[in-house]
Length: 324
Image 1 (spheres, helix red, strand yellow):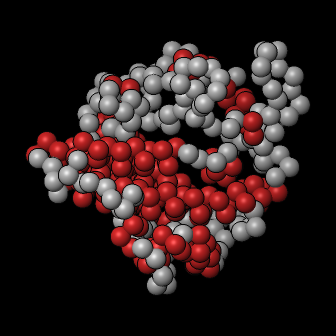
Image 2: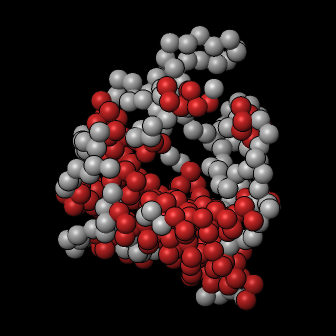
Image 3: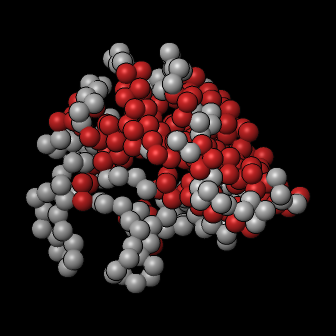
């Protein structure tokens, strides 16, 4: 793989400036920056889960352009329609005027910082918790570590060497003179999963009743395998995936055509999935992702209510032949 030298520190400092300007009022109040409401009662330990739910929400709330920026280099898609920024990204030409690349960097780092804030909030609840609450807090922190790792993994896939935040303190960005290499980032992610796994539930995500589809031990093993795949540490990949398979908990969904539609939601195949919903109403309020960029722009669907797309994610001939 060919890497093109990029002045990441310049972009990182520009991002820091954006955060500091946009949030200056909050940052002038350090206590509020560490306390979501400025008056949270951390002795109400039953509320601890809300800090974790906030992390889930921010990680799942991805702009339509971000999966395209992450995935455009894959050999299963062609260069991205008429979007020159995505074409440049595919060729390792980084253009900070392209909104997709810019928002990926800004929002991913914002959500990573948010994950640290959530973990720090949970630790404050744990100061008042009994033994059961402390165990639950450790599980929630482990889940947040996995969610953080998802974002950090994709950032490094796109940019290579990136900064690794270790807390919610934005001052950590101020004195950055170098950033870890991609290999160092991937090793950090693998180590983080080793830390998280002992505290995570030994369940399929769809077996969870508190947060259906949420992170479990097997989600962390998947992330560990992916990080070690990037490191070319194939024995670690085999060990992590082997543990998933040996659990006997997972099976392939019988109809691949339906796997990524509603019937495949929370299937026994899924190791992790973002949760979206229309709250059972079919109209009105909904939490969803915009799929229009993926569809062909010269298509007249037969199904009422369906529409064509923007043509930004054309499947490659290699992928089509594989699927046939």
